[in-house]
Amino acid sequence: MDTILYPLEWFVAFVMVGFHKIFSTIGLNPASGWTWALSIVGLVVVLRILLIPLFVKQIKSSRRLQLIQPEMQKIQAKYKGKKDPESRQKQTQEMMELYKREGTNPFSSCLPILLQAPFFFALFRVLNHLGQIGSGARKPIGPLTQELARQAESSTIFGAKLSSTFLGSTDSATKIVAVVLIIIMSATVFTTQQQLMRKNMPSAALDNPMAKQQKMIMYIMPVFFAISGVNFPIGVLLYWVTTNLWTMGQQFYVIRRMPAPGSAAEKALEARRAAKGQSIAKVTIPGVSAATIAEGESAAPAPGSPGLATADGNAAGKTGGQRVQPKKNNKKRKR
Image (cartoon, rainbow, N blue to C red; front, side):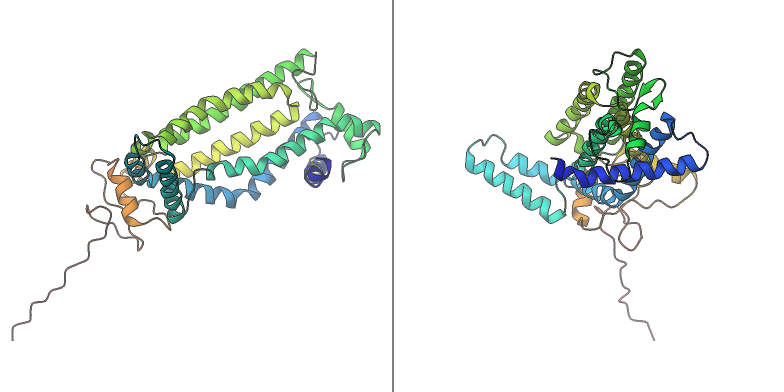
């Protein structure tokens, strides 16, 4: 484990020490817990910027997943009540073929969390070993020298050490700070999931097993973070609060500016543009067929809304999302 995580621990230490030097140079107290806390926030910003391309890919994949819900429901209805192994295998194969054809999969939304997990464990280990590095019992990690580790380990915010945990401390200040951060962490996870389901999913996509699983996750994840958070150092809790706030804000921006077709957020965007007198062009997703988009929208129609914008930017008529070609005048001119 040490061999696998050491490069990530080195990266975490390098970024934290780098931001610590920047904040110290501009006048912040190097020994202050707030300077080290801001260094952890800087680490989150660097990681999330690096993950932006993946986030964009995740958004596109999620939208494709929402738009193919009608086709998924057809496959589910086709094998409804059939519990024999052969039918289950065929259903899975047809689902996989659909995912492959439309360029999506149900696990795409988990990628950012999965990629952050190693860095999370690396930060956990760095903060957990600050005391040992500071005392000389453990070797320094890259630029995180013995002196800096000792300084970081003794620094506090609101009287709580960044390396202390709720369960591992008898100090009331640490417990209060930990509880506040755990509540914020759990609340931001719940708000992010609720924002996605209520605003950026078509009504037709909410009535299927996958949506029900997402709704269950929406309630389970905050409980999981609340239970596991009591074992996290204050610095790790600060990391997760920061990354959750980043995710929530990033998602709010995307939902507001580029909502999923057929969702409540898209109707709100149409209303705002109509109020400003702007033309309404619905979001199109490369790689998703027009028939799939049309079928996904027809399952959750928006009364009075115009047709889907085509690839060339023109608004389609009410013909299931297909552009109406102008009729040619074949009449010969009279001489």
